[in-house]
Amino acid sequence: MKGEIFKLSLLIIMPILILTGCPSSHMSGNAQNVRTFGVGTMPYHIAADAFGNVWVLNFKSSTVTKLNSSQGVIGTYPVDPSSSNLATDAQGNVWVTSVWNNTIVELNSSGQKIGDYSAGFDPLGIAIDAAGNVWIADGTATVTELNSHGSLLGTYTAGINPVDIGIDAQGDIWVSNTGDNTVSVLNPTGTSLGTFGVGVTPTEIAIDSKGNGWVVNYGDSTLTEIASGWITSGTYSTNVEPDHISIDPSGNLWIQGDHDVMEMTPGGTPIATYTMGTCPCDMTVDFSGTVWVVDSTNNKVNALTTNKGIVKTYDVGLAPVGMVIDANGNGWVINAGSNTVTELIGITQGPQYRPYKGPQWIGSGNW
Image 1 (tube, rainbow, N blue to C red):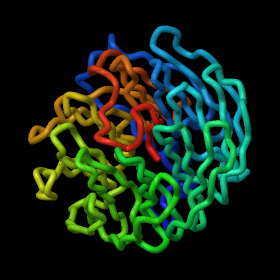
Image 2 (image 1 turned 135 degrees about the vertical axis):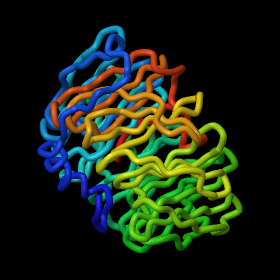
Image 3 (image 1 turned 90 degrees about the vertical axis):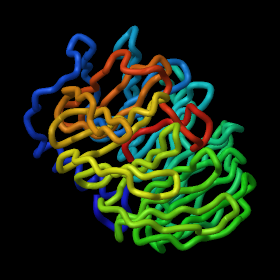
């Protein structure tokens, strides 16, 4: 996942993942609690909604598939070509960005297209605030805000090549900018609260329960903390090339790299590093504190707990790249190499844990 614009590298590496997915290893997961469903071609992003449904974005077929545990596949619906990301709002509507068309499509909860709106140039990161407004980071240096009906509320300056957006409990917008190694913070009206230097090639941003922002910097293998008072309060070395970050209910930080997952205390002190294979591709955390890591190379999902490492593994499909946990505690894994979704039934109490990255039912997934 190297490259100046982190999330656009998806379009390059996805075919490689499909070609290099390894045969499954022996797993300890309960096969009776696993089901597999066919979806569109090259699924690579997934989101859960507030009603127990999951939505899968299929890149190559330019479609979105809706599923739930009681009905399986409910329907597959067309979206714009080269769709890059998706999120769900509190009403169950689905918002899908397209880097090809520079648009965002809104589908209602039945999959019907409500609108197709302009979304800046090469829209990538997306988040939805508590008022239902949609925030989109584009591939230049701006953030676009739309209301829940798709009307433009504003276009605001960010850093160069913004790729990820987080929203804190105050409604402030945090944007990581890979092109100039900064994080931009805006208030809910789009006014700048500051721009902060971080490490090299910042990718994903997470916000803890105290309102502090944590940014993983792929280019120099570091983690930067920006305190809630808008002070860059620390940069910490990691022993992984970090792509993703999650925070568990105890406040511990989980940083996913190209081969390993590193666990750190809320103060940035290393706890342990766990080997995951050559391509761990996504993480999600449940309310018990279990961290679920998607291992694309070995076609499995690993469950980790603090200080123990891997406590359970599940076989999934070929080249899995993303996972969410639905409102009922079922895990859903998208398999790019086999055009399938694997459901891990009843693995935890739902939904997945978020210290704060916007309202609970913003979509989540691997990019």
